[in-house]
Image (cartoon, rainbow, N blue to C red):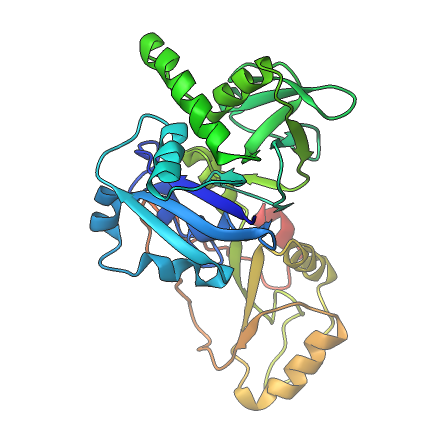
Length: 353
């Protein structure tokens, strides 16, 4: 039996400004709800089930065919739209399992993060080892996993630091009926104590009753769970518009020596944009007052020094330039920055920092 992928998105999203978090636009143009799936290998997945709040759909989606957002998965998509907030992610998951009569293996995935994982059957939790390569912000909001020498989970705690391993929001259950059974068992306790029932709480009770869960170790993880984490993520991306002459090459002229295409490179500036481009988070658009008829000599000059770029804009006026961009809660102020670099200066790195 194939695995059912469950994506609950019916929370209030009150910590985010403007739109609910799953509708936030990533730098590459994808919505968060799309990007959160792109690290997953879905070869063992049958159908994908997603739950939204009617309030969010009515207010922000403007009659859009929601299923079409997920056509890239090549999977059958099932959408549940509910009228009222649920008390927890676990309750949303339970409602989805009941509504769609889902049985067999399930994998539950948070909508507000990215990690790379091949979804397989089993009882396991996707976890990340915190170290210098995997720093975690907002650590007090995480659930923590304790394991033994055979990668069996021996304890899982919500918002209590018991180890250096955190849940990343991926939970696999071999049998959906076990999840439903233990949700009903745990929800009564949560209601009496007036506490939110997390999926980690359900797994904790399963562990106490001798069910075996393993940790599936994740290497690459990006967290978008709070407004601060989302803004930190966005801040790592840049689109740079860089003038060629006087910035990457010493200044030149169409009419007098040294002429366009003949000057030496400003290597310190070139090296910093190479470094930025290699991160995969930076777009580079080169600008120039050079005429389009100088395109070949310009491209040749750039190629000689392996200067990376996405495109070149020729025929700019030789004058003051303005960059105008809108800002909003989804693209916070300032959404545009200008740098005035003295001609032929090699201080680009310091000014970009």
